[in-house]
Every structure is written in structure tokens, then in C-alpha cells.
Image (cartoon, rainbow, N blue to C red; front, side, top):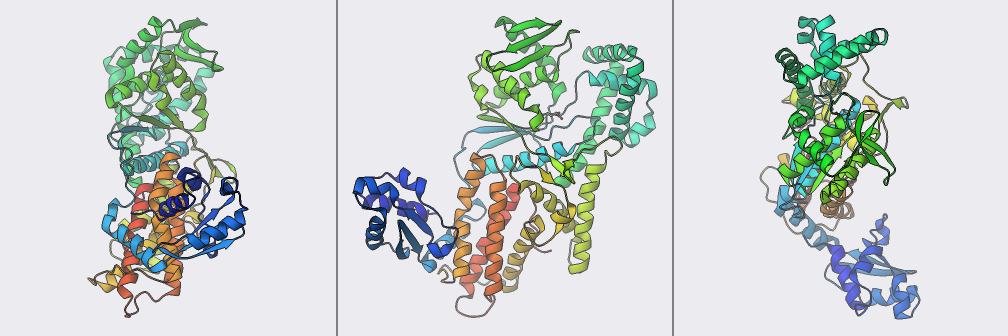
Length: 562
Ligand code: ARG
């Protein structure tokens, strides 16, 4: 696709005898919010010095000289040169590029041959799947999709929290108070109860902690009973998590969690030793990080047990060696910011120059009535309930509006889940989000269902006209033009979303596209049988392609009917 902006950036540079470079122009040229000021606006201040003229005169000069088949007119307004494109040929060009490339529209080869590792969701087994793990899942999936659209290969890793001293506690509690049938029935709920009970009882009976240490030792040493229980807890917890992932349409390439690194830590610890990085602190082995003003990184506890931190270090090195990644992204809550700074600092001390490629991607919290929303004891099912509630409400909407729809159940799921995904992703990543099912599920406003509905509307128009060939001639209509311009910006928005690791860039752009298209729909009789019908349908098809693709990047379904 020709980028119109680039054509004129080059032209302006040529016209000024290349005294200002294309890069300088690209930096200042604007796409006006209000199209009365043109499709592009160039503030001429940066020319004043070299051309020795006031910017307003320069604007007038350039307005006279600039000519191109894609330009309808130019205007000098004060220091601004405003450029208006020819709508018909412009929209023809845009719509055709979208139709020609189809699903590939917006793809780029930037990442060709490079691999990005994305660590996301990563819940702890035998514990509730928190809202934080949900956010991480949703953002991680979108970022991985966007990276693939940019040509990168991705490895999606669920770094399950399935190892550590807490399993000693869990085994102790299960042996003392556990009930096989109850754990079979609802594993996470029961196991979490046992875990909480352990902490309660250990307050008065500190000997329980010694027992827990022993059980964890047994587990580490491969004791049969310990290993068997652990495998069971892990497998059944994963089953529950997978139900959630299935609902959300999220998949992983690897479930290598903390336990996977059990036999990979020794080499790392040895390396730290060789480099003389380990110091003793209260019996524990740590790496001190005074230069970075970070707290010491704990490698081994005084009883010799390794930690989350040790495993993460081994994981980073393993991933580099296994996947030769270009970037390793960790979508993890902001409370772990220091942890990731520490990992990088330790990798740096090990002379692993790729430490800079380790990138922590934090995010804001879910709030309920302004307070942190958390899944507490006994409310473990909450998250799954929320997802099901969204699906149910979507289903009620369908019953009210379109009861004869085929595949109602499937579509209700797409809409309910799409609502939750979009509600999350339209927010800037670091912002906190007020959780409101009601807001998420409306068909009006900036919601997932609004996008899906707009897409279904486009599909329905195309269905009604059947096999009518689309035309390449373009449209003069101003609403059509506003829509086409947004379609042209899509590839850049995808690129921007990747560079800024911000799916919301795409989410917001899709809303703009949908609003522009709905205005067009409201002002023009698209199906009128006149001589521009096929041009209008071509635009409809292009809108459909971009909306569907953008939603796919965000992890949403785009049903053709709803
Ligand atoms: N399981 C951790 C938690 O729930 C998140 C793990 C994130 N990934 C990582 N490689 N540290 O807090």
C-alpha cells in the first residue's frame, strides 16, 4: 500500500531543495483531528530559518506549488499548509489494497526470523486464579498475536507456579486434614482451604513448619508419595485453569513452570559461585546489587532450599538457550517490578549481554467500586463465574433481539468473552480498570459487542447482495472517505501497538473505524441499486476485513451474525 503521507513528505522535502530532511517533516506533519483542516497539515515553522521567510508566506508558496494526482486541493491557513486528498482516487487506492491483501493486511516483515518469548498468565497451582492472572492472560495473548502480525515467531509460555516450599505446607496439610473426595471434586477450592488452614494452625504450632520443610525436602528428593500427591494436585489444578483458557480462547506453547527448572538451577548456582557473586547473609546465599540500589537477590535459603527467584534465573537462561529469543516479555503485575530488575542485574553480572532483552510488562489492577478486586478464600470460582455470567447476559441479549439466530450458544460465548477481553484491552495497560459487567456488555459505546455488532452488520450487507462483484473505482462521499482513511492507518497502528507494547492502540483504532463506518451506514443507503453500489460494497468488505483482523489480534471472535 502506498502511504499517502510519505508521498507528500517526500514532495515537500524535494520542493524545499531538500533543505529539510524527510525525517524532520515526518516529525511535525499532522493528521488533523478535524478533517476541515485537511487530511494532512504541515506546520511550516521548521522552514523559516533556512528559507528566510515567515512561515505563513512559506505555507502560501508551498500551497501554490504542490500538485499531485492524489491531491484535490491545498490551503494555506496561517503557518499551516493543509492538504486535501482526492477522495475518489484516494479511497479507491485504499480499499483495493485492503481487498488485495485480505487477512494479510497490516502484516509486516519487521520480525522475520526473530523469536519473541511471552511469559503470561502463569498462575500458581492449588491457588485461585486471580484477576491479575486474567489481565496477564488477556494482555499477553494480544501482545503475542500482535508480534506475530509483525512477522515474529512467538513462544507462549505459561510459567506455572508449581514448586516451592508452599508445597511442603500443602502436603503436610493434606496428610493431616485432607479429604480425597473433596479434593477430587473441586481441587483448587479444597487445596486452597487446606493451605489457609495450615497457616492458621502454624501460628500456634510452629512445629508444623518443620514438618512442611521435611515434606518439601522429600518432594525435592523424589519421594514417591510426595511426588504422587504433587502430580495429582498439579494435574487437577491445570484442568481447572484450562477450562478458563478454553473459554477465553487462549493457548500456550509451553506449560513449563517452576518445577521444570528443578534440575536446572545447580548449574546456575555454580556459575554464580564461579563468578564470586554469592555472599552469605543470615545463612542465606544472595547476590548483592548495591550499584543498582536494589535489595539483595535471594538465591538459596538458609536451609538450602531454592526460591522463585532462583528458578526464574534458570528459566531466563534456559529460554535464551532453547529459543534464542530476540526479546523475552514477562506480563506480570507491577508488584514484581523489583524482582525483574534484579533478574536483569544478576544476568548482567553473569556477562549475559542479552539481559537488556528481558522486559517486564506490568499492568494496572481491576477495581471493584474503586477498591482492589481480589479473589479471596472461598471465592475461587469467582473468575469462572464472571466469565459465565457474561456469556449468560450475552445470551439473554440474543434471545431478546434475535431469537431465531443459528448457533446461539456459540455466538453468546463469543460476545460475552469478547466483551470482557475488549473491556480490558481498550484501557492503557498501566491504568486500573473498574470492573463492570454492565458496561462491558452494552452494544453502544466503546465495547467489544459494539465492534462485533458493526462487523456483523458489514457481513450482513455483503450477504444480502450475494455474489455481486466489487468495484475498484472509489467513492467521492465524505463519510466513505473518513472511513477509508482510518483503514489506511491500520497497519501503522499495529506497528505502533507492537513498538509500545500496547494493545489499546489497536482497540481504540477499531472503535474509530466502527464509528466512522456506522456514520457512513447512517447517512448513505448502501444497498441502493445505483451505479455506485459495487464501490460501496467494496468499502464495506474492506471494513469487515480490518475489524475482523483487529478483533482477532485482541483475541476476540468476530461472528458473522449476531
Ligand atoms: N506465578 C507468579 C505469580 O502468580 C507469576 C509468574 C510470572 N512469571 C515469571 N516467570 N516469574 O505471581
